[in-house]
Every structure is written in C-alpha cells, then in structure tokens.
Length: 187
Ligand code: XMP
Ligand code: MG
Image (cartoon, rainbow, N blue to C red; front, side):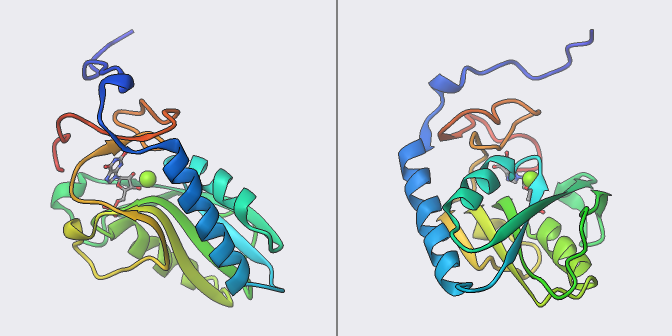
C-alpha cells in the first residue's frame, strides 16, 4: 500500500482550541435557539459530508422540534485558487425538501464557496425556508459574501482538526477541536 500521507501528528500534542465541554455547551445553546425559533414546525437538517457528521449528530440531539436529517457531499477543485463555480455535488439529498424548513449544517464556513454553492442548489428545490448552521466560522477567509445563521464559534485563520474535521482524512474522531501545527497548503 502506498503511504504518501503526511506524517502522523499525535492529536494529543496539538493545542486545544475548544474542549469537548465547550463544544457541547455551544451545541446545546444552538439547539435551544433552533428549537425556540422553529417551535411547532418540522425541520430538515442537511449535513455536508463528511466534516459535519459529528456536529449534525450532536445538534440533532439538542433540537426538540420535529426533525429529520439528510446528507449531501461535495468535492472542490484546489480551493485556494478557485472561483465560485468550482464545487461539485457528489451526493445529493435522498428526500424531497420542497415546502420544508431546511437548515444546512457544515463543519466550517471558510471561503464560503461550498455553502454558497449548496445554498443555490437547495433553493432550486423550493424549501419553505433555508438557514445555515456551522460549527466554526473563519470570517477572515471569505471569498464570497455568505453568513451563517447559527455559529458555535468564530475563529481566526488557523487550520483545525477534530470534532468531524480532518487533515488528510485523519483526526475526525478527536473529541476536542485542535490546531494543526502548520497550515496545510492553501490555508
Ligand atoms: P469553504 O468552501 O467555505 O469550505 O472554503 C469549507 C470547507 O473547507 C474545509 N476546511 C477545513 N477543514 N479544518 C478542516 O478540517 C479547517 O481548518 C478547514 N478550513 C476549511 C472544510 O471541509 C469545510 O467544509
Ligand atoms: Mg467539510
């Protein structure tokens, strides 16, 4: 098997940006806010694979209103130098969302390219409403104007891993959000 992966950095040696307790507290607060805003209504959470899977799992369990969830997956081409068309859908939603209240759920809002592409795509399905929840927001890196409605934490421009987020597919299961010692290319 080929091993052209970057060297494994033990996650325990990386600086903790947010502990699992801090994350849990913010996710519960978002769940409460969402439950109040959508009281008496049903919502569909749409997670962006794979990064948002863990955040979505926790968020769904913090929401008291009627909810279902679905996933989409996207691929992007060399994010550092791309324009807004450079995201491709590789897995669409399984169930129709026309007339439904939808919340797109992401791990990080960074340049904004992914979520503005997905928002455009989801709006074509004519949901009753469409909002965005993201665990992290890096406002400094934005290339297109887009804001999330629900954010756990705003962060500066460091590359982070854990709580679903990866570097070269690793570290998604790390419970805290930690800072990668060196930003990968493009960041
Ligand atoms: P946009 O399109 O907003 O992309 O630039 C958001 C996606 O970029 C990835 N991303 C990160 N992934 N640590 C990660 O593990 C980071 O610090 C980071 N910053 C951006 C992520 O996949 C997100 O969905
Ligand atoms: Mg992602």
